[in-house]
Image (tube, rainbow, N blue to C red; front, side, top):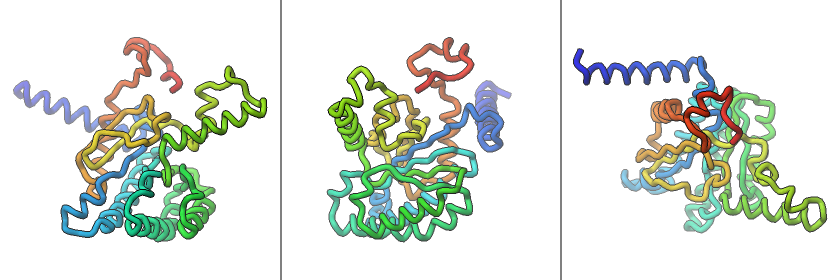
Length: 273
């Protein structure tokens, strides 16, 4: 065997070992607890096929089902999907209306499968801004899946990180104005407890599809130490194998949290994020 073949064989063996680890839950420390995804490229996927943009969003819902099922199968604890940002309200009214209708239909259709797969649905964002019908169906699904204790699927709807951080700052300021909180009592934990993600661990891995390398006002506080994975693949084409590839890459990373490799390797557990 020549050196090139040996290197290729070693790489394959490593990838297979990591894949075995992920699939068979041998080493949970190498598996992300929380995966966050920016689902980008629906419209461009449709345009590339001479289809109306809403067809890309419809196909994107099928990808949500596929990736949710794979995360559940692999034992991921939390999956947070950037579904609709506060900035998306500025899109053409007919596209916004179509997206809201699609959300309503998808929630109604997917609720039985979520229950079947032991997936609990929740959301972050300004739910009061949603139209009545999608809000009603969302709240119904929250209730219907509240007993599920497998994967938590969190939809970021009418969400942006700046909106969230501003909201938290106002809540803390109100407590201070009432004398219930002093400036010295405001810590990282205090801020985190007033974000919409309170009670949810920070993402270990952030994936963005669609080819752009930016985070677009998404979970800015929470992704301070997340591993970032960008792919050119449009969201409707994103497959379970694409996800597994991202997980393999994550499993090979060393998360140092500002420390050295030697410190991390000598620690019994990773430092608190």
